[in-house]
Image (spheres, rainbow, N blue to C red):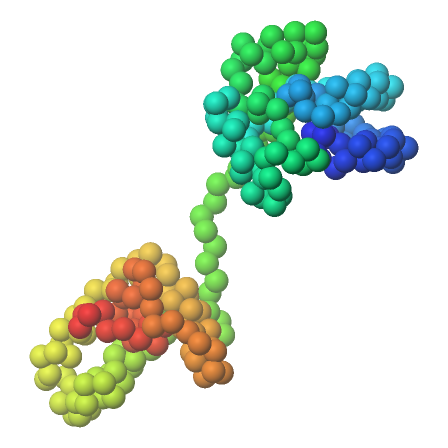
Length: 257
């Protein structure tokens, strides 16, 4: 669609660059045929009437379909004053300035009846307003998400690699954080509690087919840490994962905290 008086073509029109608009309309039309629409808007803004007249001429000249649109800035008409103040804030101007951007109070969400009455002399523009959504329909082809598989790079099955690295990570955490000897790990009650939780999480992750995802995240997090790139200690639900902690994705013990 061609846009409003504040759009690309509207600004060219305001500068009197009619030949440029003419050429671009022709080029777009050659590429998109009747899928290109000239917008007709009636808010009562500056240059809107003469821009409409120009577009209607071009519509007849090039056989470009027209479409009735209403540029909505706020829901109800009584919100105009607040929007006008907001426009001044955005453009760093004052309400009492003469040469500033000022819109009419017609940029509210109009009803079907209001639009029909406003464009009663251009029924084809209203009809295109109704038909346009049907030309934009799209039916997506549904498919299951394709997750990357890291197993080919690490030589083995992703589930097995995740299990192995998580278990090794848990042992290293107990050796370094809890200062428990390697020989005493298997009998340590705290370690057994953590291991049970780890096995529970691994079972769910493997069932959900997220093994490669965890391994890839672990890979780039470790790389970042080894290359002095700041990495957060963990956020959101991810910080509650023991597997993430064992893989050094997070730095917060989810059982202790």
